[in-house]
Length: 141
Image (cartoon, rainbow, N blue to C red):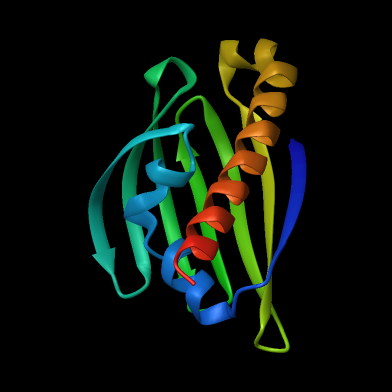
């Protein structure tokens, strides 16, 4: 299992950050490794969905759990990638917010041969997504 953790400090209140990141249907706008999303079901704060990812336009089945203003936990159940992506928000004096993204994933089958390349891609993609989120939030202030 490969792990990756990245953090970004934003000078934006938690409520504004949550409004952007919790709108998970907008993920392709920020996470360019996500091509498209098809929601299958929603029960409260739990969403089951199929996500087409940039890696050979493969489909991953995911269960996303929203813990309002705290965390978004994504369990990747099937596809070339399996594991979890957890986005955690921490308020800093209600004037700033820290976003931490933690990946714990493994590639399936033949794709294991590309683990190093894929992890570098996910690292770069996560950095860029956090930067896009930051830019969107600072533009709206």
